[in-house]
Image (cartoon, rainbow over all chains, first blue to last red; front, side):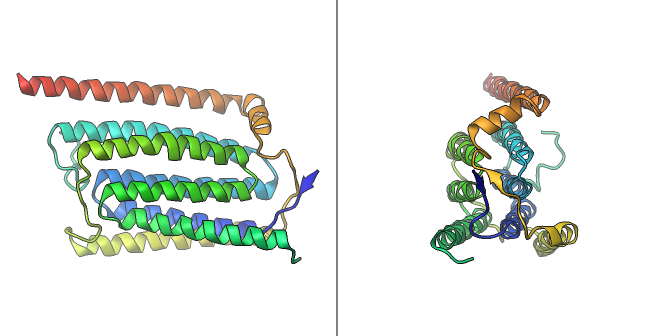
Amino acid sequence: MTLGILGPEVSWYLAVAAFLFATGALGVLLRRSPLIVLLSLEIMLNGANLALIAFARHQGNGAGQIFALAVMAVAASEVVVGLGLIVAISRRNLDLDVDKLRTLRG
Amino acid sequence: MFDAGNTLVWIVWIVAAFACLGSGIAVVSFTNPFFSALALIGNLGALAVLYLLLSAEFVAAAQVLVYAGAVMVMFLFVIAYLGGRADAPWAGGPSWQQVGAVAAAGAILVEIVVAIGLKAGGRLAHQQHVLSSFGSPHAIGRLFLTDHLLAFEITSIVLLVAAIGGVILGSHSRKLAGEKAL
């Protein structure tokens, strides 16, 4: 049994993905709390994931979904390391502000 | 082609897409990181609905389990541990930085739209028909263990390295706290 696509075309999904990516980029550039920068980074990764899955459906090829799952694993790893760094920074009683943490010397 | 199923999918798509975009904007604009994290959970749930509409069932399930479950619990735990210090998006900092941030984000959006439109604009209209097993756990597992075995193994190494890194970061800062106490 083969399935056509119901509802909107792939280009609509790609528009949502582009808006999500731009929203995440705005958060990364605008916010100074490293926690919210990490959250915005997740939005960017999810925008990319949505584009990958939309193109996978468009081409009828499962490789895009495999790539999306790999991106998910990388995002989980990035959150582990990022949150570990944030907790380590806050234990040193430094300000959680990415504008003040730019020398990386503790 | 107008039929009931198509209209229903459109309605679900519109609700999910607007929930997705609205909660994305909420993540960026909330002052309290705790509310931002809660909005991100809503964003991930709406995205899982969009994945289901694109017949990516396994990815949608993994999204809810891994992202909205495990990763966001870790986020909420750390935010609660740190006390959720407020950080207003528009407060402090020179205003040219904020104008630059908005301009750069807008430029990225225009760039993505133009790039996709130029490269694939004409070919997006007609889609492949796929088997009903497309995106099922069976199909994904088969792809992972045949065509994409290397990616599968590298993913496991990435996760292992991240776990070791998390342990090292945690134990290092504990030693530091002990030194301070002495």
